[in-house]
Image (cartoon, rainbow, N blue to C red; front, side, top):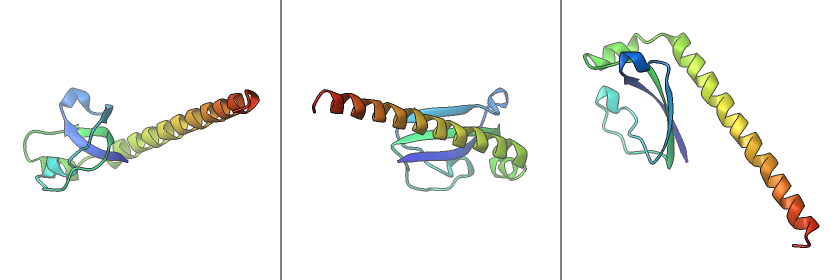
Length: 99
């Protein structure tokens, strides 16, 4: 399962999107105690944190969140198309070889 979440980070990292293996703990930036989610994760740094994180997150520009969501969704779509086209090629080659 792919977990996707917004997060707070350093000021110079706002706008960065990270992809990694393993789960994430959603809500940890606002002191929520939720179970870890995902086998891989994608996070988008939407604002900087460090002091009064809940207030900062509430005042994050929606346009930044929406732009990052568009980039993430288009990236997932691109990867799925690539994987799908590669799978079709593998199946075609195996059929031609008599498998």
